[in-house]
Length: 274
Ligand code: 8IG
Image (cartoon, rainbow, N blue to C red; front, side, top):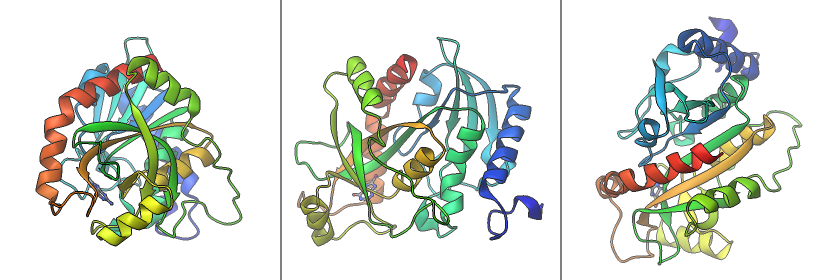
């Protein structure tokens, strides 16, 4: 349907998101979702732990969503009933900016979650750590970001304030559940190559603690949509040059798999407290 083609300039991406939300409501039988979660590398098990799954929808069957480009990303949307009676939309399909499909596709899942009623957007990812104390497997709260993609999900003169984008209230709440959680500034690079060691040093000097390839553009779209954002990174590797080891995607995946049960439990407990 050309009307819902995100690639056409004349299409309104919010209309596509509303249609996607309508399809999700129809397929899940749940009219309104309260919270949405995007589960990045290493976080997928949280979907099973957070509550009772009442519907699983292949993302490609919902308008505007594409097949995940990555191993370790599940490609489904789930409707989950939380123990407190709230409904969570769990998004296991993220479009990364580096896929080159455009920022509308990157922002679509967040806009769909907002159109489905979600007022809280939980964004998770696997990322590289700049702080040497963060061994692979450490979960970290995102406190702010630096956008090095030279892109934005906003179109036209949309001047959105990003103060307290990663909600202080939600970070405090997360720490009541998991008091030891560290936090840091997430720097989004375009990727898909990992940073050079010099780029990691630059990220450190300009105030970054975490390097990754997602989340920032989604968080901006979430703020535009009026949602409260909780961001969490799983540090799967020290960023290039911080340790003397070169980075390998296989090792990154393995670190994610090893940490998954622990951090997924942490995330599930946090989401149940939101
Ligand atoms: I997992 O070291 C993972 N994702 N940019 N750098 C960037 N993204 C990442 C990294 C990393 N590790």
